[in-house]
Length: 154
Image (cartoon, rainbow, N blue to C red; front, side):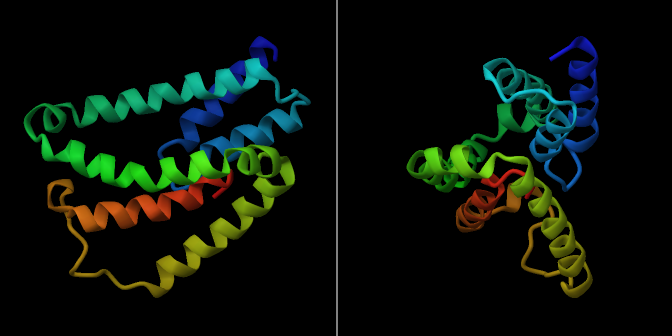
C-alpha cells in the first residue's frame, strides 16, 4: 500500500464512517480497485484508522460515560450477541465474506433495503428519543441486529 493509497483509504473511511453505509465494505472495495492485497498491514491499517471514529464517539459521549454508569451495562448487553457470533463464526466470516463480490452485492442490497425500510416504516412511539431511555431489552435487540453488520458491505 502506497502513501497515496493510504490517504485515499483514510478519505473513504472519513466520509463513510458516520453514514448508514459500510465503511469497511468501501475500504475493501477501494483496496481491491487499487490492486492492494489483503495482507496484515492493510488489515491493521483499516482497523487503526477506524479507531479515529471510535474516539470521536467516546469524546461525543464522554459526559454520559462519566456520569451515567448504566450505559456500560447497556453497551455490554448490546455487545454480547456480536461477541458470541463473532467468536463462533470468525473463520467463516473472515474466509468467505471479506471478498469484493460479497461486499459489492451487500452494498447494493443493503442500499435497496435501507430505501425500502425508510419509505415503508412509520416513526414508532416505542422508539426512545434519547440514549438514556434505551432499555436493556432494546439494547439486546440492537446487538442482535448488529450481527448482520458482520457481513462487510451491510
